[in-house]
Image (cartoon, rainbow, N blue to C red; front, side):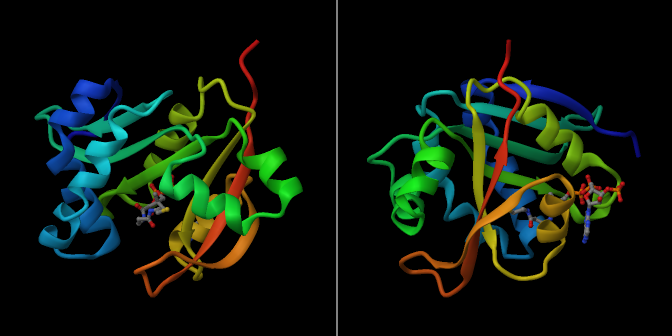
Length: 180
Ligand SMILES: CC(C)(COP(=O)(O)OP(=O)(O)OC[C@H]1O[C@@H](n2cnc3c(N)ncnc32)[C@H](O)[C@@H]1OP(=O)(O)O)[C@@H](O)C(=O)NCCC(=O)NCCS
């Protein structure tokens, strides 16, 4: 099996490859492809977001093996407002205002633990004009929790509940090096 190559995707690439992205999501999160594809409207809604950046890990034959994307969040967006309400006023001001919001980071299980997730995230976070990055992840001791901790992400909020989702989430943040 050839090793994946990292490529930056524009909005059109991400739009065109949404189903591939959701198939990687299904495998990585261990949910059915149908459940994953029900998230398509969420991805579609993100295609117009300011500061959208996406990085894909593809094999020579084009198969998507891992993917990461995010954008610059703004008030009025559902996730941004949910997270903003959970942060203290001071944390919201220092972590969320102008932040790059990481929406998805997934690696197919067969390739996990080989440095691909780290490469995708490093590439995604090299370049956004933002002082910080923020994300939410299930608040359990998953592989992702250990991965983010090792990459310098800190817990901002624990036990956050989103409407309609029975899982508790942690809000994580990371200071970014702003481009000169
Ligand atoms: C989380 C995920 C993206 C990480 O990608 P990955 O390719 O498996 O991770 P990497 O191999 O790049 O790991 C990089 C570093 O993270 C750390 N790390 C990874 N897993 C870890 C764990 N379980 N505990 C502690 N540290 C861990 C290690 O320091 C590792 O560095 P090393 O290779 O020098 O040991 C991937 O496992 C995944 O897709 N998981 C399922 C989906 C998911 O939870 N996505 C995130 C949702 S927010």
